[in-house]
Structure formats: structure tokens, C-alpha cells
Image (cartoon, rainbow, N blue to C red; front, side, top):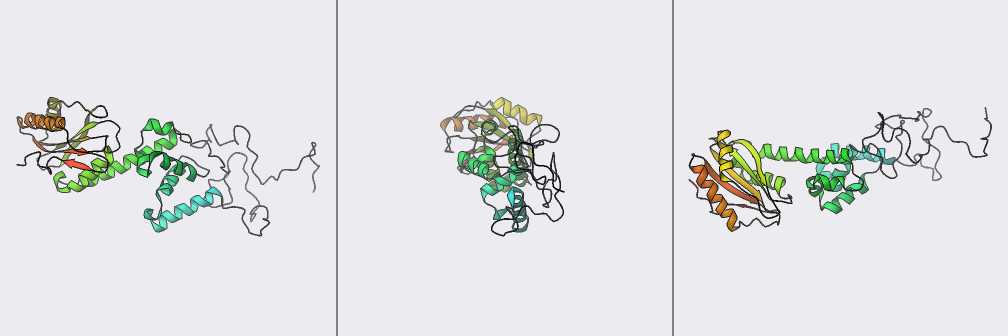
Length: 306
């Protein structure tokens, strides 16, 4: 049955299509119990309930008639577009079937952002972030404040990025600290580089070890400026006694990127070694982390081995 023409003389809207967006976007896109994690990206489309893998109908969406695939295309092809959800499905298939090594860095970041942006194309944002912070690792290690100040990111997306960074650090730490720490020197230095190499100010970490050189605790003991961290030997030794540690490894970073020890680094190491020795606590090493390089006092002969 043909209905009456619209009173304003306009064209009838196909009820199978989503309502046009207003200034605040369609219902369900932001705010409220049905809101998405982040505001939709530019060019985002509504979910298609007919396509497997889409979130399903929300708001004013209604399931189309069975077998409906949209209006016919002039070029005769059955689909107007696979859309962002079709792309996401292909990305997931690529990851699961070919493994993570098949994905470029921007694709990994693009997929990570899927968890914050339920719809829309996250590829431009992923590429923009890598351009700004230099690499995928640079995005993960970027300061939280810098990420929150980046256009296109919000609390949910920044939380997702920081969660992945924390997971990566904990995995590297578990591998490095599995068994006696000194038996995994390469893994230990790789873990420390991952945790500290992109810090913008100096920080001092202390690894506290038991009699079998297994890790008891990995703690940040102090933060300083771009080229100095105050170190108090008595505080390091006091904490070692509290943890019943019998050995230590000092670690600090050089934000300049050059891990070469300064005279102050050498003197501080000697001071901590002497204070710890009074209580039978051995200083195994002092590792300085630079940009892509590390310096081990033990390897360089700056700490006598026993």
C-alpha cells in the first residue's frame, strides 16, 4: 500500500537506513547506559545488525528484512562497502590465522584502539600516534598526560594503551626474573631497557635478591631531574634489611640516551657498596640504561666480583 507523500514535499526515508546524525550524534553513541567507550571517530558508521560480528541493533536500529543487502549498486556489486566492521573482522582473522608478526606496528595499535572505539576507522589515529611518538613502543611508553592531551584520545583509549604497556613489562620481568637473576643478564637488561629507556627524568631502581640471587622485590627508590637522582645509601640498605635481602643490583637511566657512567655515578656506587657491605649485603651490579644501550658496572670492571 502506497503511503501519502510527506507534508513538506520531501523524500521518504527508507526505514531500513539509520537515522541521520544530529549535532550530538545518534542515540547510543555517547553518554548514557548504552554509550560507547569513546565518542565515534570521524566517518564512523552505525553497526549493521545483519552482518555477523557487528555489535547488533542499538537505539533506533531495526533488523532489515531477511536477505536484504542494501540498495543495488550502479556497478552491479552486491555490497556498497564492507565498512569498518568488515575491516575489523578481517584484521582479527589476519591476527588469529597468521599471527601477530603478520601485522605492521600501526595495525597492532589500530586493533588495540578497537577496544576503546566500538565503531569507526581507527587506522588514521593509529598512524598519527606513531608519527607523533616515533614508534609503537613510543606510543605505549608515552606519558599519560601527553596521551590524554592528544586529539582523538580519551580516558578509555589511554587506559587501554597503558594496560598493554603494563602487561608487556610484567611479561618481560617474569621472563628475566625466572630463576637466579644473574643467569639471565641479557633478559634482565632487555627488561630494564623496556621499563626505563624512555623515561624523561632519571630514576633509581633497586633489585633486591635472596641468597640464591632470586628476585625479592623490584622497586623505584627515587626520581630526580633530567640528569640527577638523589641517592641515599642508608635508605637503600635500610630497605634491603627490611626485605631480608642479601644482594642488590642498582639500576638507573640516563635520559640523554648515553649510558656512560659519570664520576658521580661511580662515587655513588662505591658509597652504596661500602654501606651494604657493613651488613653483609653484596652489591652485584649497577646497570645504567640509555637509549637502546646499557652499561653494566660489573661487565666494565667497575665493580669487583667476589
